[in-house]
Structures are given as structure tokens and as C-alpha cells.
Length: 186
Image (cartoon, rainbow, N blue to C red; front, top):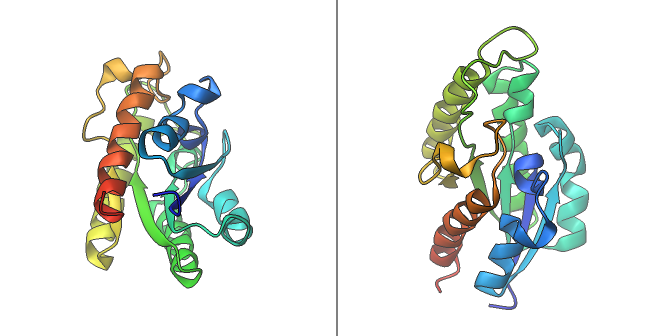
């Protein structure tokens, strides 16, 4: 499968916040599937930032597949689900235009149930609402997606309740491996 190239664009959940490079889910996936994985995650990024750098990344990497995984920072700033999804949708269309198969990542939950976002709303509830809206969007437009909450429980998160610990990165890798194995017919 050496001809498969996966571009992962996102925020700290893609980058691997405070996790050693070799133990991030993107690195684990590259070793596990023997494919090239390009980690274009940036800590603190929003979908607007992702969209702004996405086309250049597509042209540079020329990926066969693209994982678009963001939105939690947008939610922290109080942005609306529809705005975030419009950015994700634009990236999906750009990936297709550049002959890359897009996969949308449905974010993991927040286990910090008391945190308020920038505009004073419960952050965990905002994420739950966004997860449902994004999942419905993927089903409506019939696009590949990974529901990262499927196997993720509180034990796989750091103390902040948002970012993954090393075991969490292993679970994340398995979720992407499951989808990619189906897409590339391993």
C-alpha cells in the first residue's frame, strides 16, 4: 500500500498535543498500515485556519485520501455549527477536486463537563451538539466519516478531558485504520 498517501488536517487532536511524535495516532497509523501519513494538525487551529491552508497542502502532498478533523476550537470560541460545517464542506469539495478521497472526522467528546466556552456556554454540550449535526451532514451528503467517539472513553484522555493520552492515541489509530482498511481494500 505504499502508493496510499493520507493527508490529515486539523487542530491539536490531529497534531497530537503534548504527545511524543512517535506515539501520536498519525505516526502509529503510518507504521501499522505501511502508508504515508502527513500530519497537518496545528495546536489551537480552527476550521477557518484549516481551510486557509488546505489547498496548498493538497497540492504539496497530492494525497490519495484526506482526513478532515476539526471544529472543537471553533466551538470553544462560540462559533455556530453551520459555520464550522461550511468550512468542512468546502475542504471536502477541494479534496474531491484534487482527486483525493475525503473522510470527515467526527470529534471526540469533552469529559470536562464544567468548562464554559468563550461565550459562556457549556463546552461539552456544544461538542455533543456539533457531533450530531456533523454526523447528520455526512449522512445527508453520503460522505465517508469516522466517528471518533465510538471507542473513546474517559480513560483515554488527559486530565483536561479534551486531549488524548498515549492509550487514546492507540484507540484513535485503530479507528482510522478500520476506515482506511475499508477504503483501500486491505
